[in-house]
Image 1 (cartoon, rainbow, N blue to C red):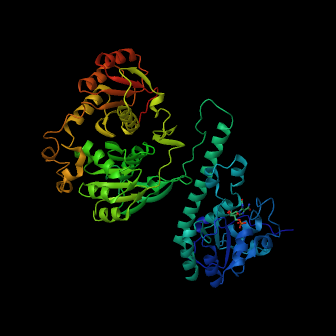
Image 2: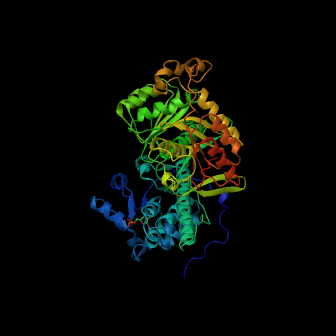
Image 3: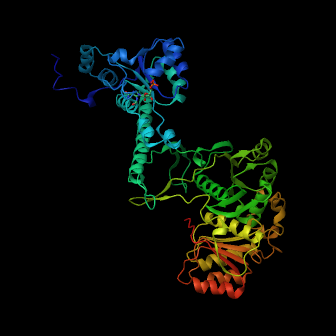
Length: 577
Ligand SMILES: NC(=O)c1ncn([C@@H]2O[C@H](COP(=O)(O)O)[C@@H](O)[C@H]2O)c1NC=O
């Protein structure tokens, strides 16, 4: 009844891929109809026959253009609420027939199947549906089956077929078709992108599904999914990685929103690897302050300074953040959770800064900062903080829930007073500020604060007592004489390096106040011994917030009591390594 397939097909290696393949027949099946009519107009104008599914065909027809419904090709109705439309041998044989093999083409003729040269598909919006909080079955219904099948088939047959999944490519499609067809290199490039697209799509489905079945039942604690598909899509290659000998690129993760990888760059040269990681840390530090207007200045992923403004004045918050450690702020990254005003921009301009990142900029601020050729301006939507974060380790990765912006222990009314007098409102506000800020400090974090600003940060130490010493030393040596006008004091020397360079002392600390005295302190984890706390007490710190939980808590609390220092325990810690 049917002609047997030859038993000795031509070896694929012996076949030559055609350079240019004209497009005579295109299959278009798209969820997102953006640019569809323009594309169809161009294809019809070039004499291309269009096959199309349900509402895609309807959209094309409504524009007065011809489109053959796939049902006419398959002889089978689209059915089961769209679960079966293009899943038919007449479609897949048309896409998959290897044009380099005469046997395939003869077989198509015998079966009455016409080849398809171009496949334009975009998939059901699965990740958007999940993000919208849709119930389980609604998410399952948005798992596209026929679309990925066609995309993968067309990508496999790239020696003859071009596959397009992104409406942004439609103008290039129209141009290629008008020019006589896609070149081999283009078809290969499109195929590679198509496979990445379906892989990312499946990774998102697999990750979500694994999570659903593990957390579907009420559990004491959330369980990370059994499968984590990254599905990262390369956005662009970077000049180099952390060091010049390391190749690097930046990626986005489909289905996520906001964050530095998706930032819009308003000005400046290309972002570097270290710019990305420092900006990420700076955004986290700024957004840890909830509704308070906050500015964080970050270098090498640690804060040079963080501050909030009680009046919602971002310029004031920047002045105070910069004033914490103007030496280190040289070449730093600044992020805020508020609109960058012209006043803040005028302060930033004289200071050599790598990146300013914010959710919005006043036009005048952009104009002022765009005059700095080495400064990058990033418009960043607030980064998501729910979900899991992944750190690569040799042989795999460790995965954890993100530490949240609004931690459960942010509210001082949940803290336990274990030493000294209850803090007055201003001191309590500073303690809360310090507690929110200390999460941005890496490795044995000790943070001193006063008046809504960090004044001394101890970080990167392998024991807590050294971090206490460092925080005190930096508080007492690095401040501007007047933190009220840091940028003005930095003045024109800032750009030449004086603020961060050898001449810094002439500007900064000739008669800098001992800022540890009267400050409050936060420790990201408990004090294992009283020695670190004693360093803070001796320096004049008046109140301390820390998680507690050490086997020597009594000893630590006794030292605080002996000194009349107020101490609160939060009950939980905030490591960030
Ligand atoms: N089941 C199928 O045979 C099938 N074929 C194509 N689709 C998808 O249907 C959408 C287009 O449908 P419509 O043209 O009806 O809007 C596209 O996102 C495409 O990926 C299908 N739907 C889901 O699997």
